Length: 167
Image 1 (cartoon, rainbow, N blue to C red):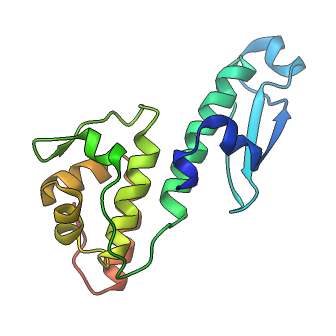
Image 2 (image 1 turned 90 degrees about the vertical axis):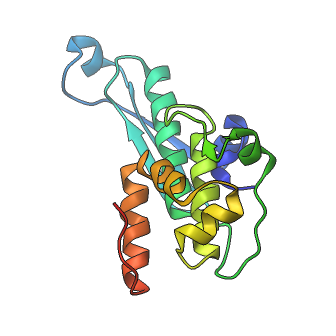
């Protein structure tokens, strides 16, 4: 299972959480209380942080969401040429050739990781990856665009392969 898809409790077992004080909006409360959160996923070295809220719990939730996205973008569970079948989660989110999910939904990062793994397995050919995932080629691009860093990363890999970037 991709680390971005792990239940929160399991994901946090591999993480180091650091609480910090930060300056900025929020008044005296923010300057006196360690509300900023930095989470380090030790096996990968990837990290995320959040400090925009006055609540430590809200910042931790935001930092976990950001860490999941970092894992989805930067940790691959596949190799070129792998024959990957869509997961049950993926299949449950595909309706009429479209992926139905909000970028703020809890499963978004897991779905993004699966799409990126499939793209890698297909040597960054979005048409082949879309076919394997049971969606149209325009829908995989639309889905990837929900996370701008994913589109940037996809285009970087496509350019390295001598392929045209996607918009």
